[in-house]
Image (cartoon, rainbow, N blue to C red; front, side):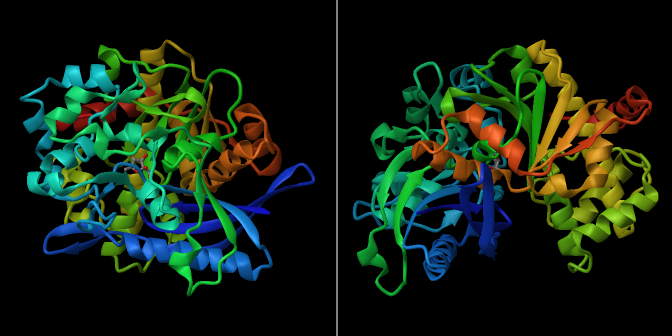
Length: 485
Ligand code: LRH
């Protein structure tokens, strides 16, 4: 028996095998594939069939490695969903959250119900693409034809097993759940013309979904496999796999997005949290992730696309290091960077509009992105301390971005906090750990995190003496004219 994590992010997916051997968590990536949305007739879509097929290909590899039995957990990015008809068939392709259809929806919906009311009910941050806004923009007739709405990882699980569920950690990002009742908020559902019955029942991470519906996949050579509903929101899994312990730690789950926050035993819903757009996403084991979304490696991924992929991420770091100067101050958290036609032009446009010298070369662009991300992280950490009244002494950076030693050091320097980087595969690790807890091979979250600490290399970065207050002040002045977050 082996544990398998299917961990699918916005830009790539992987299947990873996990086992505990000699008291350590051992992992092996057995399958990797690309992901990304494409634009068809002006709309951004995910290729969900491709993802399902890649999971099946990965499972075939599990079998070919000699494993006849496994459990499988699936996690993906949050927010996006599939509409199913009464025969369980997909009604339309899956629209990607960066699509422009919801650009103005927050403004539209908050004419009917105030921002304060939505926040008070859900505790969820205002991102233009939250499921609530996407569903609001759906054709009402299509919604009437919809028998079930499944979030992406729940849909993949449904395709594999024939069983539907609404996993809680991911469901909370819809901005439709009310943490006071642990249920859907019926008033919000009514506003978007959706009924509670159109969702499957909410389930906790760790619940067994069911065995693979082998008869559907006769042409594949698959192992016996039980699908476990893990913390299906990738960020929820990543934070399970983050080796924080005790008090005073924050995290940055660094990938396409940088999710920066703390773990809390209860939601923090107040004026200051709303003003600073902090969210209370539900975590495994009744935790909450009080965090904010920060535009992360997406910006560099988009710059790289525009440079015809001539640079790899290591080269960007090397070029940026040669400059290593706080030359421009750019609010990458502005909505204009969510999905611009040309990321390089957008960055240069921002600089020109704020009377700054625009970055031109790959190194200048990368330097601009890294230095500003470090500043934005530092500001968010200050905000977190202010909102929670808690002192943060250390920051755990996990995910692919933790590989970037230059950014890790910059983050330590500008924030003045000690940074611990790793593991890179925290999301797949969290996915595996949840399965191990469900199988009673690991006792609880604390033990799971101890196992992570003992099994993976964690690098420490101590802050260097720099005038962080002056840098942050310069940033705030430069971007203040249109600072929305
Ligand atoms: C990261 C993530 C994040 C969400 C975004 C849509 O992959 O799941 O937590 O806000 O994608």
